[in-house]
Length: 480
Image 1 (cartoon, rainbow, N blue to C red):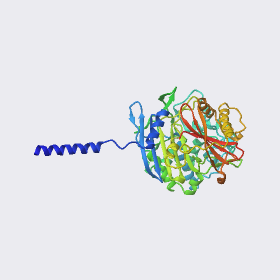
Image 2: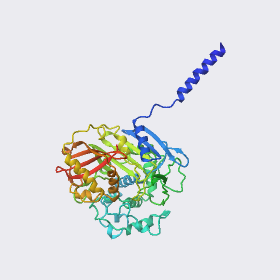
Image 3: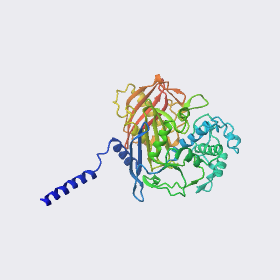
Image 4: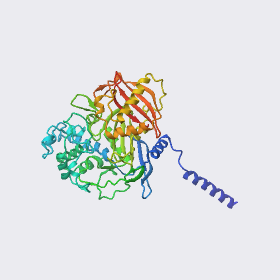
């Protein structure tokens, strides 16, 4: 009898143990989406955090942080943020503005005494909004290039190189993304605060907010749980050696986790970092000399998708943070698959924050929309032809002239690759935006029309911002 009782107890304990150790419930729709996209895009590892009104509702790691050692990604994996850093630099500047140590319309030369005469009309505001005329990504710090890449770059060396760079246009004339500008903002932060850049962001942001996994890059430091950097070469994953020792990395240098970034974003939204009025100014599109705006604020892309405001930024290392303030939603996706500045680089780790957001925000994505009857097949054919002209760098009367000047060579190449295997281009729907006074690059937008494009590799949704006479003021696409 005693033996039977013991056997029953053992059986119950075994069943209880099996129940406690059983695998979690089946992955949800977000997990399915992320895993499918990682496989399709060849992303080794990814960390995701989703927050509603500052509270995390989903956080998870997927894949491998370090392929050599088969280390899995977790929510505590540290990634190199690259240009997502710019929001911290912009926030540090605005903190100094609130304290009266810097003014947005201060000429750069007031803070950088060795600034060349060619910078006399460039202001702090121009640096923040990438409208200074300083070189773009492939043209900055050109004096450092002869002799090949170096391992260490001092602030003095980089500033000297920046003073020799040629300006692309007059300050405020147009937008051109520039790492040089955000490097100079780092120098202004140090000059106005009397502290090193890394100490300012650590003491004013990271430590007070409890962002214990966030720091400014230091190549000599042993950083626990750090993800490796990878890229694609001939379709295969290879190491992307980003080991430069940059004394002032105010344009690319913050390391962080998805959990810390949610903490940061929630603190911003709650007014714990900057005043609400300051944040509003940072999240307002820049107004150019011509009087029209461009969708970039201070360290953030400031845009909208189907009536939902979207404030976002990406980093070349495969990182992205997007917030939808009117919906109370924030999505952070950090990957370890980045691209290089080589035109042959075809890494695509971005847009996943938008894909995730559309699974929380009803009506954001075009894909779930019921396909409507095409009211203007001739327009559909013309838009498809316009994309072909864009790919070939040919003029097209449908394209607004200003927009044509913003299309980059690599952008044209990518459009061409997608069109090369295009199977169908189908009208889905149009959003009437006349009541919202929406403008794009100086043109008044009447409606935004959406199309489903299927090629050999993917289904992509194209959105065209159209004027009343069907000229294209802007266009954008996503896989959703």
